[in-house]
Amino acid sequence: MVELELLKGTYTKGVALQAGYPMRILVIKEGNGILSMNSGDYALFGGRIFFIPEEGLVRLEGKIEFGYWLSFSSAIYAEFLLQHLDPAAKNLFLSLTFRDLGKEESVKTYSLLEQLKREIANKKDVQFLSQYISLFLGYSAGLDGYLTALTLDQLQQVMRFRAILEQYYKTEKNTAFYAKGMGLSLHKFNTFLSEVMNKTFSNLIKDRVMREAEELLINSEYSIDEIAEILGFTKAENFNNTFKRYKGVSAIKFSKLAYQV
Image (tube, rainbow, N blue to C red; front, side):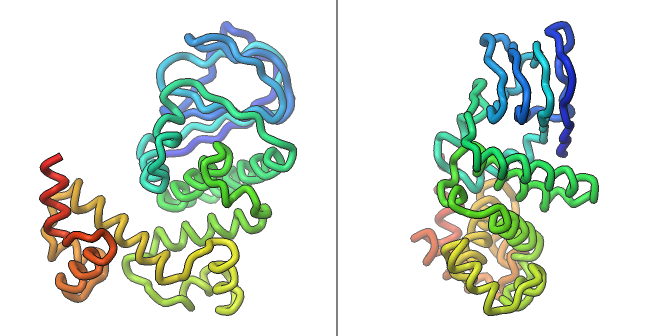
């Protein structure tokens, strides 16, 4: 689902970079040269990150002292899009785009990629890697403004929390469980949520549960009762009431409206 290769050496246009998955990112840490695509040629230099569309071969010409070649599946990208509804996220890989990272952004981006390399080596599951890629894209593409002000340690805390939340949000609603999973005291965990995530624990849980509810209502054949059970509600009525407070319409009406679109 995710491949990360370190690039180093002299490259010629005669050889295209190979990728195991359709979503492709090239990050240059040190080097110079040209990236060639059907759409044209683009300069390579340190601190430049490319978001590359599925179509077209990627050819490099020049010397790369150190770079990263990241590819991941469309399913992982779909998780990113669920968390980023703005058009900029949807357009990120439609055509070749690039961004020049500032000095501090570059350091954090390289550190996040090195951490991702370790997580892949540790065979972390798809849910974990999906959250990591989502955070990495949000940060490196400049789509999550609040992440820019965070330290590297705080970015990694956000990633860790998202990964734990993704794995357990359906069954675990206890704050202490997540604090323990992050290796924090309850007080420090609540401080992290307030100062870094800018939301309460209950709001974060509810947001994730309701996002999954929308996905199941639109893209599955489960009944309302089955969805309520999947999401950990003891009664379908409780699920319906919670969904209505969140979306302004009942789950049944939301499902009907979705099928009319």
